[in-house]
Structures are given as C-alpha cells and as structure tokens.
Length: 108
Image (cartoon, rainbow, N blue to C red; front, side):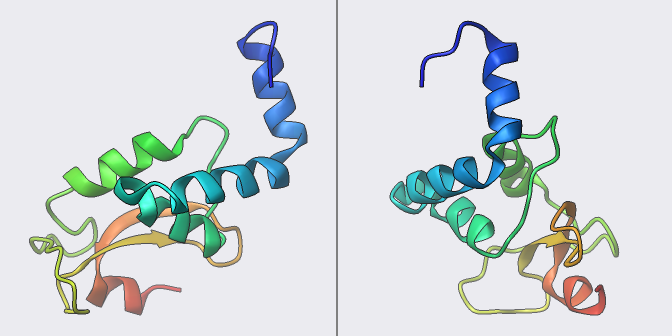
C-alpha cells in the first residue's frame, strides 16, 4: 500500500490493526528465519505503538538471562526449565519480558 509519508502509514496501521496482524502472520509464518514471530502473532501477542516485530525478535534472541530470576537462558528444542520464553500478559496481549520457562509458567 503506497503512503504519502510515515504518519499516513502509522495512521492506516493503527486503524487497520487486525488486517496488519493477518498480513504479518502470513509473512512471518512463511519466512523460515522469522517463523517464531508468526507463532507469537497466532498466540495473540500484540505490539505497543512504538514496537515492531523485528526489534522484539532481536531483543528476544540476544537476551541472555531471565529477566525475573537471572538464570542463563537456553534455546533447547525440548521444554526445559531454562528454555527462553517471550512472556506476555494474557488479558492485554502485550509483551512483558523474556523469561526462562520456569518463571514464565509461574506468571499469569
């Protein structure tokens, strides 16, 4: 969609949040390097106005320690206590922290 400027683009995206989520979900699920973002969108995780998926993903993969207990995070394929998780508020859908699986299970 062509926009005259960044403000027009932001305005359109804000007014069409659901459509943007569907577009993003399809893009990220079909992009093997960013498939995890697609799964976050499917789970109902939402971005705040000043956030974007690529920045969130970069922070997620570079975060080394759990933001709750401080344990070193791992990227295990199996679910382990130290596996990296993107924590979000289930009532609002907004991202809170990057946590270990153990701390993520304790939050709600």
